[in-house]
Image (cartoon, rainbow, N blue to C red; front, top):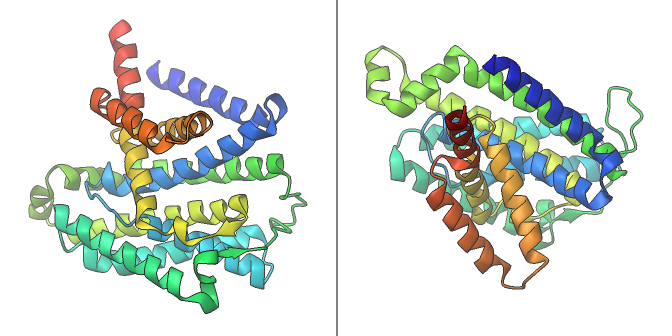
Length: 314
């Protein structure tokens, strides 16, 4: 019964999301597109944080490299969007594999600090390598002419691009869910709870952590690849270490113990930011206070707190 209700709720949510361009103004289509992309970004981070117990402060490096890979290919070679996204996934995975090879050797705060250091190095390369990345100006002026697979889509239309993002995010989320529910995902949760006991069972903890880190980088690269055409620019801000704080906050805000928690956190974060910036210039102060209070009083995240309240009522 519980699983049936969950499936019905998800089906209704997907129908509403698919129908959004016909029932809401363009402004809300842009907001929903941003929420979907950042939700996937946060969900990729939660694979290593919520499931494996590794707190990374350099996750924006994979997000940014995906955005730059897509922007460079669209600008210089006019590839179809789907091909660019596949390259973005590969770029995020390769970069995560390299960074993770060194980082997963350490634990706890040392791991976090090393990922932060690598993230800062990636930002420095992107910011200084002007001949490729155009430095602080970023890569702009590209257009998305085709999607690929023979589909004739007008990707310059916000509604069409929203539906493309929705379809790809749903597919990526389904794949990520299967990974988390597999035996591999169970081992990751065991590593989060007690890595020593997992090692005693004869499993190579470092290899599993590296695999999770690489997969998270691949999904973050996809999110970044979707963000570049949405913003019409790939800028160093997408790689900056401060960007790495956003998936951390979104995951905690939504609930790291729940698979869809990061998506709820991303939705709340973007909506609050949009609402507050329209009301005051001191939006960072107000947003910081609200988010701090929500994290303090919703210890299990928004989704976790709501589900606990719902179960208590029943």
